[in-house]
Image 1 (cartoon, rainbow, N blue to C red):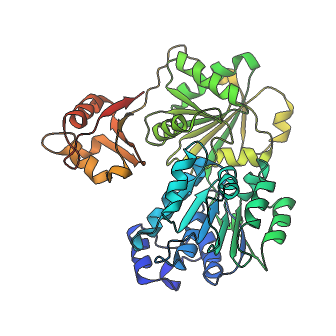
Image 2: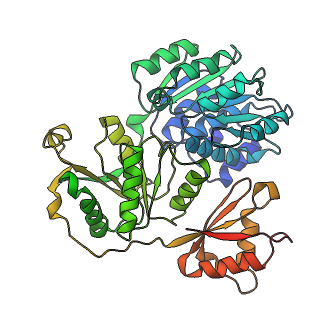
Image 3: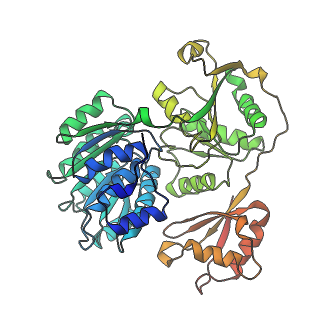
Length: 455
């Protein structure tokens, strides 16, 4: 498909200017095909893979018709997990910079309900949430959806997989009948088509999977024994030396056990799964995304919505339950034209028949380089500052405090994530103590803030 610029759309000059600053130049296939329909206020059911630009597609659409002067909820985006909701909200805030005072609220579990009620009482334009917490707000009558005109279901197939079908239907019954409904899904199972028929009107069916660039991934399968899977994993990490790796397990217990076992092998690894408290999940995801942790051990549900740039490798410690899950797992690497690595450990011979493909490499795990001495440490360490959006801290304030008056060089400072009450800063490992002293003994915006090192 020829490149199509956003300027061909009937968007406001302010929005186009903001898209230019965000380096949104030409549209991706899903944006080029869906946005003209979305801007005409039509319902759409879109099949597009993760990383295709779908968030910008529905985000531009709902922001285009937003009435900024009315502090009533006009759009709601439902996501399967807290991580995806957070990712979507962050992208919407970037897209919303073209106008002042656009308020976007996140409503999901793991955070105080009363605090969310208080935020809702002050008004909002857009809410991004997970089914369980949205149901709670509806049941408690703490959310008013009377002015809502746009509903988005993001990664709808995963929500159905996770058993949210009834919750979604209950939420929708509490929204105005006259609305635009956008449904985004990586796959089109019968349940999705049934849901579309039930909640949408004359929906435009858009499929861009075949037009999206395939990720460049080398897929390797290693046969091993159950009691040798840990060693095979260590051998993969030592042989290929990926800078960042996600290892997938099928259960929460195994994910935690494997992360603990890897740490005993001097491999800096963290686990992410549903049994962790929200603040722990946030700490883990921040560290992995800012390269303060090289190995993340995850379950499929916990990794939903995880957006990590330049992921080097994926390891399937456990065989996925189906081919769609396998495709989704390995599709996290090899993006943006870069080559990725995907490794799968298996025990039973029939796996070779199930996954047979001329592009896939099948070997015995004994072919891997065996090592007893390996130490994998991250290039960065995360500094936590006890202040965030509530204190009106910005990335520029933190960067300035760390680089001013003989402080750190800018190249020693990595990603800065700012949340409501805390800020996370990736610091090159050898400078972490100096960074800590600069914040602890200095000031940000004329104020003192305490800090600590996340380990």
